[in-house]
Image (tube, rainbow over all chains, first blue to last red; front, side):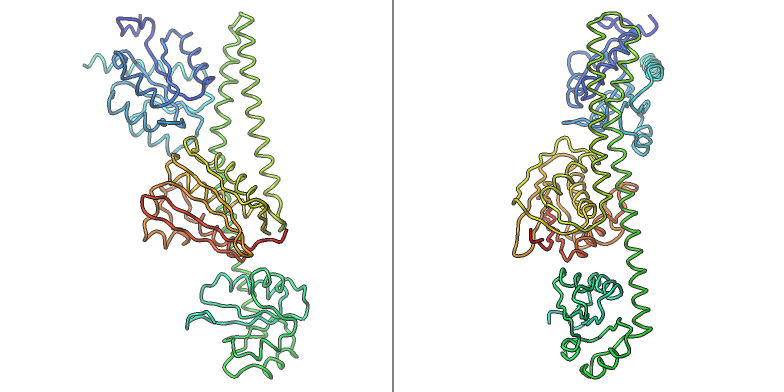
Length: 143
Length: 343
């Protein structure tokens, strides 16, 4: 159990929250991650993501967040600012269809773990999530 | 006379290419008023342009020359007989510019027009850049559905799941095809360089569609209040550029969240279109500068500061007017007024 961080209902390699407004995009991400042994929770916009991370004991259960940028209601940038402030130890990977170099640089400077542009290669996605998990694990051990 | 004391009143004699270029130049110069344009040929391009702009025209120059209305008579006919005719009839205080000096002015006007066209082109390229990243976003989402689900098809044996993935892949492919079709239609329209009759309501709808690709629109409620069958004469791509720019600005000002009201109306020989947003409004000291070239409040790299300047340039070139009104906290309203085309 390499990332055996959890006690309750999060077996396997760790828990990832996917925040994206497109059903089929979430589906592809979910399939990719669950097949690789991750537990997945989903939110269809930033507000839902904030609600999900705050509910129950998800704050301690979530290891990595995958977050889109352009979404209705609460957009990705607002959600990311919230996650970073409230849950600074949870790495955030941006997965967006919007190839914006300036935004990528800004977000990476602000501490976002990585900025991936859709369509994301499966191996690249899994490698990035795994690296984020390692960082999360290291931070947990520090505390 | 409606000019201020510093206004220079000009009569243009000769309305061929040179005269038309001077009309365009003077129309854009705030301290110059064209008191009349004359040419023996009633179909001379400059006379047609002057009529469209509501400037007095005549086929016999003598009437205009004799009036004591002009500070300057510019003779671009190149005809020595016209020169003596002007000196015979002109009031003493009117100066005359003809021959080589008029030719020089014409050359400068042409140069100014070339630079203006380059500026329009530069702004167009900048907005294409914004548009391209918006389109990339729209296409990349369904594209990811296609590539991602295809990868998962590899190791999927259940026929019902395979069918489900295939259906979703087809839908995503059709979505991309729809986006590309929309772009093709736009590309065809922008190649239309000829002046023609344009349906104003349709142009606003098209512009809203284009702006939707260039900026985040998800939480913007679009309200339209159109007076039907309003037509103007112009180049379709230029008018589209005007409204795409105004709508994109409005949506960006609202941070992608609020109400965008598009309305059209007719007003005594003119038609007017308004683009209204419910954003934070424009501070008074900015309101006087927004049409200045290179004035921008957007982040570096986000705006050229040329958009509204070119919008005003295009509108005034059609004999129209653009005004901006705003109260802080209550959004902004841009009104474009253009001469109506008799339909």
